[in-house]
Length: 311
Length: 297
Image (tube, rainbow over the protein chains, first blue to last red):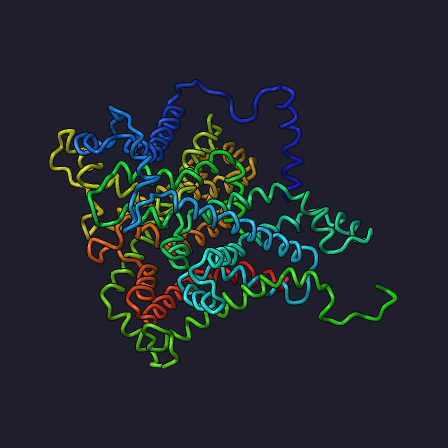
């Protein structure tokens, strides 16, 4: 079906290519009613999406007196970085007043090993599922995928018990294991689909040359699948950094990840609310995934599309 | 390989099996085992510690008689239905706008999608600030001269769930837009040409030709939104902590609070089992369509 359509379309597109013009409809006047409507709508919507980010930044740069008097959309009259310093090194959660820096480093110590471990497990696993199928493998895989839809609330308590039994409840190691478990369905799917799409001949040739399971994985599959690893890293870094539920369930106050600490700082009932410090802390927490997002650009989109659309 | 006798069944493909141990353990112990465990203990009267002291459906009777649970369910329904409709509509409209061969498409897409990179905690806290009646949108509009203007969803228990919805839509519609855009791009250009030749207006082409053709995309999107709705937790915690009073409670928060604060595990298990049930209602038909039919072929 699709082939017919393509071949039927061929002569036309070739003809257009000869004319060396861009494809698509004839360019219209720049200020046609259609364009004004189109770009107008898009710009208004874009402003709406940007507004919270703008307000966050602006608020974090104001002093408290200015916040009390002015409106949240006005730019700061006097720029001050004090709220940022305070959020990073002095903001209080309960009795601890060492700022968000502690949560930041906790999150780093959680995210880095979780990302490495979950991707290592899932890539090998996806590779086994794609090229070394054994009896029953697909059954487990289907359980894994369906399991991804089970609400976490159903499984958090049994995991608490398991972690307590092996003595890891409350430790960062325990949380790393939890992240690896819940990252597994989506990552395994990602890697399995990627490895399945690689040419079968490659794998067969390596087998003929005598390479084994790990040899093929390390010397052929790994070097050839760098893009999908990047996608997986993006997916995991943002996902794990942004996690709140597992952090609050499986860690103790001194090992809380950044999101949990941020929430405790902002929503604490004691003391005077310092909105500028709160907003600075909020930006600081959102900064890591935002940087990942803006650097990775299209790969991020590819990652979430791969994560979202089942193969 | 040929000279030795047929190897033992277990040791065939041994490395692949070793590599799959984490998957097998996760699937069996955590997903199947953990779920079965929770469902089993939801029929007990466990308080501080899980105990196998069966009380039948008592926990469920108590659950459905608790006002907080009923509020949670009502909130989830309102939030669920509205976020489903609005995410699909807004997501599709934005995707359709971006699909008009416009300039700066990448810029617009980057802007619409960036909130999705932020956590629900960050989203909730930003919108808590924006919707703050003393400083946020309400006070700004009042300062402009419209002194009677009132918009304080986070402090008004009858509309608080809409305040959460606003934040959730800001965070999540970018993703839906991306999925829809991928779907629109997957549609053959010839369909558009044919529709144009036949003189069908654009909106009609979208409504009666393109959208029916994008059925698989819509179904996947629907499943993604639906499974996200049931899980909504962090956003509420950050934005309102369930308040004012219990007006913005959601089931996921109910489960967490009963398990870890109220020391009433049985209630927590019963509530989480209800969550599981509601997800299954969505997932099972979908999984059947997706995997069940294919297996035969």
